[in-house]
Image (cartoon, rainbow, N blue to C red; front, side, top):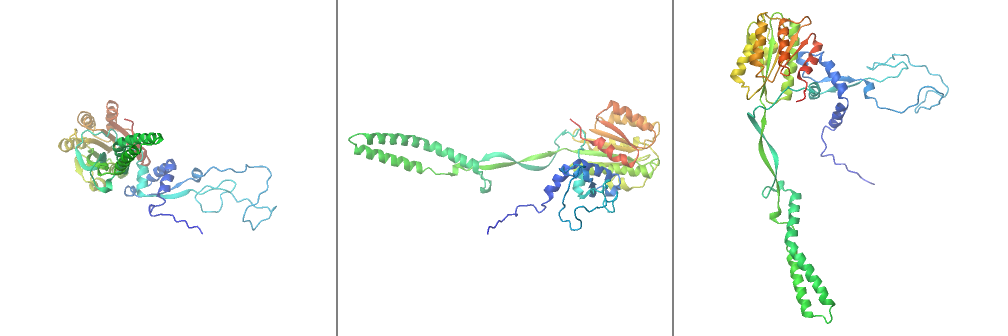
Length: 423
């Protein structure tokens, strides 16, 4: 009897993880669409959870060969214990009686949608796929928080665990060839000379004995060459080098004035929640500054930014002035990559909107990598939008603006503002 033993000790405990990753890569387009549909139905606190999604059965079906419709043919189905050849069977009614989620075809055949659950990490990976902060460049390697070990050739000293066998054996072979080469050449000459002496008549016994002694001496010297010498040992060398990280800061400015009703505030909060999750997930060293404003602006923490109920009038320039002040005091533009995102309904004092444009054009945009403005309204463009449109023309690539009219617009607008762009 043959016994086969399969060693599974090196296998991962998550044996299906590779197949799962392959499945997600193969149907990434369908999964991305399902994620986009699911995000419009979620609340702010639910954005970071996993999601149960479905893929239409027609998208995962495999191509098959089968008989075409029409013609006269006979077939026998395996496992048939109810019917005989020639019996009449009623066609199933359209729509069926099942409880599946798929769509029944007119001839009574169909396939249910394939439903599976994405984990939190898988959901966020697909949700933030193909997004990046524009113009993220390393202006100065200012923060060196950690080191990494990299290969740096070979060394003649080290610990046994770092011995490089290939380089060691290569060096040993080269040493044996270099040291034993003269012996081998001299040995070949002596053997040829001995053969010539033996062919002569009469044989010179003294010469033969001398040659044999010399040959034996050379062979002893060649065999005395060690196979591996301590000189041959080579160790893989690794050195620690600093791994620099780029400093970046994102300013989140949100209008909480009285003209921003609860629905608009919720859409603004959802947009900033997407931005906050995106930044924390994709960038290890990035700071986020939250600024809320009505007639006056103040810097708040994350909890106050998303849950405070303070309201008032509208002076947008107060937030921009506070942002400029914080940049000057804490974030030098020579060492920081600075980004800004502003959400408002566009309602502002007529005299204040031109001032906002001037502050952005003269003081903020020259210092930032990217600034995005979101106007949350389903009506006509407000005076702030009209002023900012001029910046979009004069500062293309640095300033961008989009409008959100409904909750379903949040995700497309977010992807458009932060999609990856060619350098």
